[in-house]
Image 1 (spheres, rainbow, N blue to C red):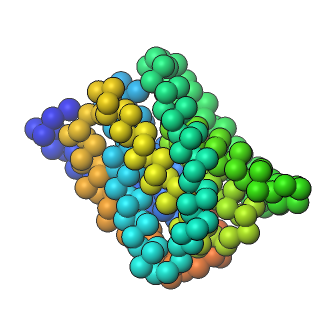
Image 2: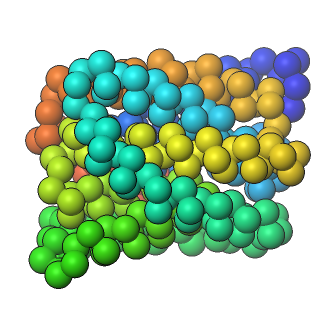
Length: 250
């Protein structure tokens, strides 16, 4: 894909806007953008890598917005990021070892799995059960490390997992979303650098995604802060249903 493919680049910018707003509010936006990149002709591994620039930009905008609204707990965010970064190194390495066909199958499986998990756990039963465990800090550390592996490997849907973890940690969805975008910002920067080092990033479509992503992230922050916890919970539920319908229709 090059700069002459204007309709495709505009479609990517629009998809980046929608996906980034959804990612900041809930998660799962990359389930829209990664398949779109594959549809436009990128090999699956390159699509996975290229998608990271838009994710990086949206989370820069998200962190700035949440900090400006004074809802980002920096100590909480930094503590969560350390194990996630360690996991992201392993996850990115694994993504670089997987072939195109295998990655497509893994992506399809994860799309189904994440959607089913979020639908079946709408009441937060998993987060509640984890929250009652002893040594909760150890559980959270391991959870963020696994989230980092997932983020490094595929990224798509990791926001749902991190929101579950911050719920275990006692944060509401507004402050939890702020921590989530910070953790994803750092893990994405790391994985993008590793993918770029291996020459897997297609920069023209990546920039198109990033162009739409910044505006979408700022919209997502504004809606999260202004609407509050109950509204965010409703959007998360709606996003889950949307992805389920998308998967059902193929």
